[in-house]
Image (cartoon, one colour):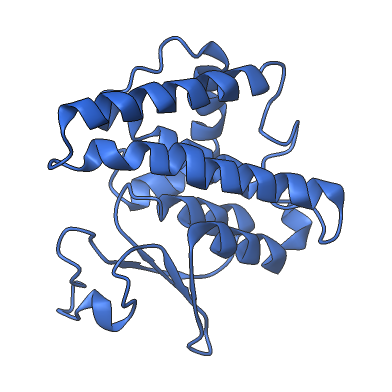
Length: 202
């Protein structure tokens, strides 16, 4: 398998999932700024949408969209318990979390990265994001991870997108449960390995 990624982007989430699952894969850098691979290949020829992540299977099949990719990865290594079993209510809870993170948190950060976005719009985006983070913080009270005591692929995704807070000037200091959670997730060996591989930590 090949994971096309850009350092620190949302592709860190499936990168973490692959390492948590213990699966063999090749990480291929596809920087979101240049859309050019190290060998000079135009990334748009691989993913016409131009964004990461993209997972290419051994037979050449390509899978896009982080929440779909991480569930696929989890299902390749069921013994690792990165996702509940299909058809169970906990599996739909996982999908609920992945959807919330994708649409409310991930997309909440997006306007803050856009240099063309007016400051007034960024203020609105920050306020909306703060309300989502406040709710998230309350949901994490008394929990090790989003799904309870078990790490899931949703945790890798939430860790990834909340990493962006410092980059765009979002203050997380008031969210004590979220900060403790981020420390727990960030200390996991697979998370550390993925971060090191992407050059995000030494």
